[in-house]
Length: 368
Image (cartoon, rainbow, N blue to C red; front, side, top):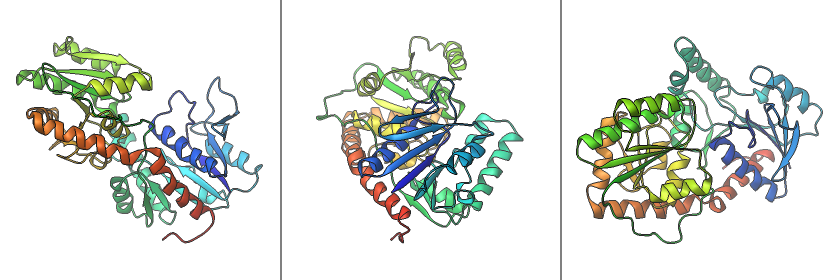
């Protein structure tokens, strides 16, 4: 069978993130199952118009305002595809109306409040309304999502058929869980792109609140992004220069070493599709403290593999950290449960059901 992924970014795009990592893994699964797979994405300065990545043929053309026209022009010169995966990042490709073949819509989260993180009113409100209208327009198209939170958001917007398949992680869980006693400083870690919707400033303020309460907390911030200058300024303003370290970009190996050393991942994002870094952290034997938002409430089992704060505030985040680290026996019980649960999200377990799902759609068979 022939499959096509439409996505703004491909794995070689400098702005590629978790969405592209998991998309590549699922498409690689289709290639390994013997299928032909193509990926159409925005043009990237300095990148070839076409190249092969892990057996997937990547095509690049167009941009934010011209990609649909470029995709359709390219599509008309290709042999027929059995299934088009129309991946939305706020704005879709409208493939069901121009591809002439079967389509599945693939999204990671309903953006909702994320629009307000990046845009001021009225642009933010336009984005929210446009997204909701798009979901209603696609209501008869099957959707593929990574979490129950995203499924519920789509159903609320009128979509009729939503299939949930959790994401996997590239990280191999530790073979054995080493000892990690809570002694001296409480080592917190944040791993994310430094963007407004990730609210890393809440993690910084959490450290300040913990230290005011006598908890010797420190924070390592892994990642780069537009919010770096503001975050550095906040650290200086709060007098936390000794306790907050900006590690910048780290290789996967370095990132896993940082997570393994930490006592907890702190993730105060506005919303996530799943929370890939939560499971990566768990695989390193490190539980997560997260906000009660879509995606993170799916990747974290409250009180079992980590802690979901009572509200979206630095104070409640600090309360959750205190709950986690104030009892040594409880902490060790939670980190072991997190580590064991991460085993279920290895790619070898996650990919086969998705491949069968996509093959079923491409073959025009009825989904059970």
